[in-house]
Length: 123
Image (cartoon, rainbow, N blue to C red; front, side, top):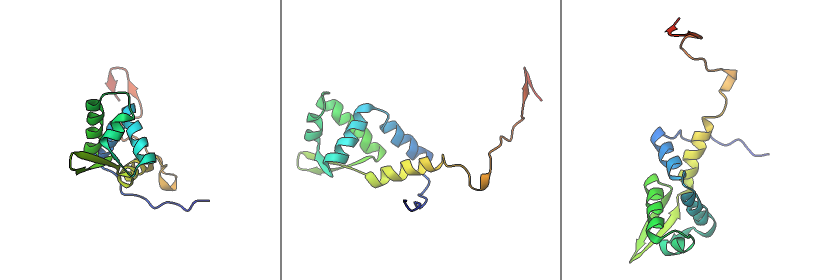
């Protein structure tokens, strides 16, 4: 049995939006998987060769991932090396998933608004 994990820092709405937006495209999810399994650091040329789309398309996807904080880039001469920011990605995704946990103590969220609406007007 796994020990309970410590609660992580709750991510900001903008962090969640950036991460999930960056991971919304299949090619970017594939880049993350390649970095995860063949990394820790891979050159952009290697990443571009792994996919059927063009070099500029791969570069665009890498820039989206970098802007979201999913990957970091290190320049060495004319080469760019990409690394998965696994800890940050896990922190944001785990923090978002914790929002799905039921409230402690059996509390149930109730809307502060009216319980029912009559057609055309609020009661």
